[in-house]
Image 1 (tube, chains in turn orange, green):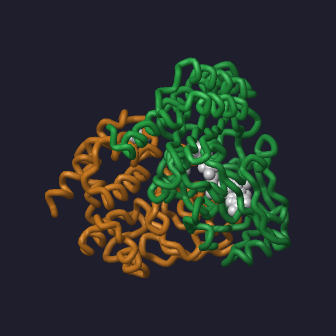
Image 2: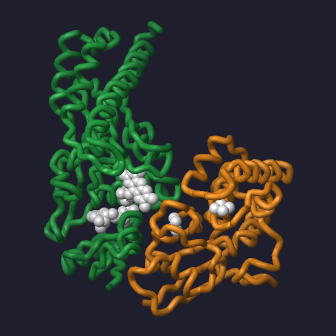
Image 3: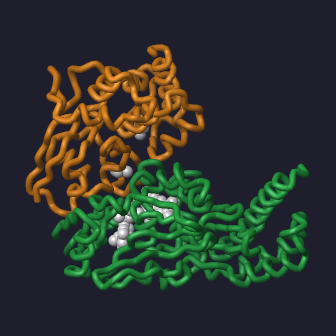
Length: 194
Length: 296
Ligand SMILES: Cc1cc2nc3c(=O)[nH]c(=O)nc-3n(C[C@H](O)[C@H](O)[C@H](O)COP(=O)(O)OP(=O)(O)OC[C@H]3O[C@@H](n4cnc5c(N)ncnc54)[C@H](O)[C@@H]3O)c2cc1C
Ligand code: FES
Ligand code: FES
């Protein structure tokens, strides 16, 4: 079957999709977006976390056909997404729906939206680097998408809020402390910027 | 495999009637795991995510009608006051990502003895609204679970909603697992006090082939509370009564040994959770009584 949906602001069309295929497979194998990782294919690790119509989900548990007509944001589009959000005055009120609508059909802007390269990093990405929260990096894309979403509606998270928001993401390397540091850092910088 | 994508509830019912073996898929958090691991290759997948009605909830006089696909996240955020037991149970499910997709309809569809919604629904009192092209019916929750991962739905039926009794007293949900997130229950216990009818209801998860109520324990406690005038005098429940209640809850279990725990551990843990949830709910009942009587 054919699936039409929007990924990182671009209309995409995937052909010859098997009906039982996951959104994760379509992103990685058919659209050449390997940022979302595949580790468990059973919702346990969160490394495939993407936003589906703004909501963080495990892409491995979304049937490709369920993405028809929907908006997906992957780690490759995170920087662009964060920039758009900042331009729309943030989303701390939780009314992000309108801003999502705005990104529909937006063209790639002088950058490679396939790899996400050639653009300034999202604040959460920069914070992960600065805090040393990336080791092998396999868990990082899912954590970035989940952490970014939390900061969008909860700009001043407590440690308990951060732990809860990231409880669906496993990391085998860092022991999580640096990840906590990174999210605290991103929250603090976000606070300063306002 | 065919991917059916009904745009409305009527279309979904028609599709299910035409293809009774079609597997409905809502949040996909059970179905996709089975497909990814090749445990299931249905001829048809019936996608319910385009049926808007299933994502709505509505409060009636003494119950809340929760659409089959309302994600756990919404239940936690919006129904904490009316359905505290179900909201607490929802919060223990998996992770934010899973709670954003999965809902009670899927939990009931899978009917796993470990599903977290079940003890809460059993304790609160609920009815499953099932529908087919033949018509609609309400299945009492006590009659819904028919065997290990089996339920009372006919092949052409879909779950439209679950009608859960609004809380008329404190409710609790307790679950044993190895960590706070991403845990399938080793065993679980739900308790609801119903001061209006002066009854207590229970729900036990993962300790029998199906989710169950501890009926003998409920009857014992109902009688003991009545006899001692506890509902009126708001006294602390006698330790011996709590102890007996816990024993009877343990006794209601019919658990197995598996990778998550042994049968005897499960029996023991259910007793501990029964005593604790009774203490918690009774304390908050007493607190509420003191407040309403202005005698605090
Ligand atoms: C990593 C992970 C952790 C999990 N942890 C927990 C946990 O802690 N506690 C827990 O209870 N569960 C847990 N689950 C299981 C799952 O998330 C729940 O059972 C959830 O409620 C399923 O809802 P869904 O909408 O995703 O169902 P789906 O996967 O879409 O469907 C589940 C079943 O219900 C049927 N179905 C769905 N909707 C309907 C309907 N309207 N009418 C008739 N049949 C229907 C489907 O055909 C299927 O058989 C976990 C799953 C994963 C992947
Ligand atoms: S690959 Fe999706 S959660 Fe692990
Ligand atoms: S950095 Fe290696 S898994 Fe997290």
